Image (cartoon, rainbow, N blue to C red):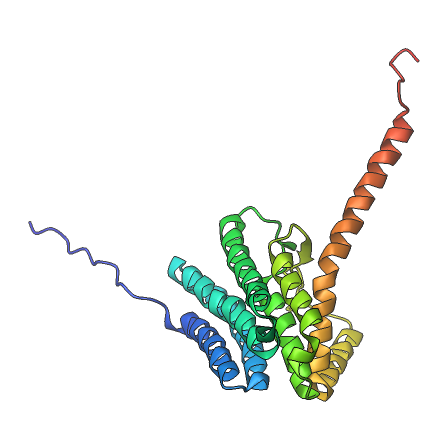
Length: 259
């Protein structure tokens, strides 16, 4: 009696989600090419496009049930190029290169921060609180840096004229990525459920403001988000300390069972 033929699993990768990841990688690479040719506005825009592609690849993979370990690793490598190397290099070429060694060290702090942030996220993704990110997400940090470049080019500002505050912004973005500050992940938002009419109206107004002054609005949004981490974390620590102090005072120090 012949043995049944066992079909071997087909080797390969899922095309659709990896196409979005490739688009993210291409956008980051294009940002570097644009910056080296002096097209800084295009470079900043390419980084924002990479953000959109990065947000879509994971959602498409979950919706189509095509998540794989290959996709996870490929996504991390693409993120490192688009949100680690590209923003640091674009900022260095636009504003920091006249600072000499200090300029490229600041750019390296940002790039190293992105690499460490991605490595930490990959190792803690299964135990991390889904409501928060530990450290500023690398796409948000990239948007902060690229937003500053886009804002400057929109108003014909020379980055070298503001290299000191821009160096501080770049280094701060890199350090925030490896910090322990908690940033809202917005993963609990239910976009499938019903919402009040005013929510839709607010969303329309946001799109209108972005279309009028895209560089200013986007930079402001991500600057506020970057500042929210330290504010939320410090406020949470103070609240917990106040609760412990209140509990201690209510229990009364030194009271035994016979008192």
